Amino acid sequence: MVVRQQPSRGRMCGFSVVKDRRMMDPPLILQLVANDGPNTHKTGPAFGQHTMVHISLWSTDCKTDCSVVVNPRHKSQGSKLRELVEMTPGLNKLVTFDPEANRHCQTILGTTSATAVPLSDIDGSEGHFFIFPDLSVRIQGTYVIKCQLMELDLEGSMSFNVTKTIITQPFHMYPPKTFPRMLDSTDLSKCFARQGVPFHIRRDYSDVKEVEESKDGSNSSSSTGPSASRRHLVSTARHSSSQGTAPRAHPYAN
Image 1 (cartoon, rainbow, N blue to C red):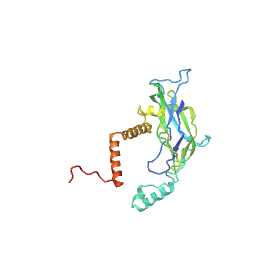
Image 2: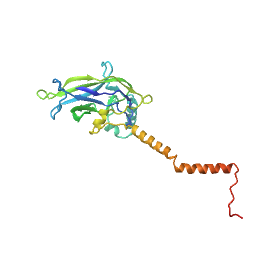
Image 3: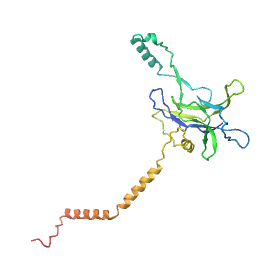
Image 4: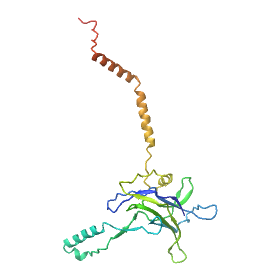
């Protein structure tokens, strides 16, 4: 397993219930490979069908698991629920209030487990990839992602065994006010998006600007045509009348 693309930054999504969150940028993409000499990229219907990758959020020194965090909205949400239970007749008999419920929540949101998907690479070659298109983090900070490749044990206990672990490069999650901007979509993301992977591809407006500039150039060149000459004559006549020049008498006037 190798890392083909990894996040470099993102905007924290916080603990609000509003579904307004930005994904890590660029999305995490891993590729499943087989180490059997020069041919490391295997393909085929049976290759990778019993494998999956699970990811988790860690500190940059890989000593602290940051995947779970205490919900700061826990106390306020718990007090509101308690008030609702106490004010509603008969509801306290149906609902059991647990003050420790929802005390902890996931720090990383989105797809945290993925199976291998056969896709065509940028060069047209076939490969198997693990796609994580919608990852985001609740709180700001610098983190790494631990990617664990697991393979199903078909001969033993029918459980998944971790066969390889990869750590991504550190990336930073910014608060909304200091978040720089989303990066341009990579060629690999665009390639997979054309094959149906749900990536959010940002549009390149460079072609649109070139078209607008060409239109502006054509409009400026048209200003030197016959219509411009007519506008020049009208402005000249108005200027002459403003200078007090008397209009020439009609030859047939009495």
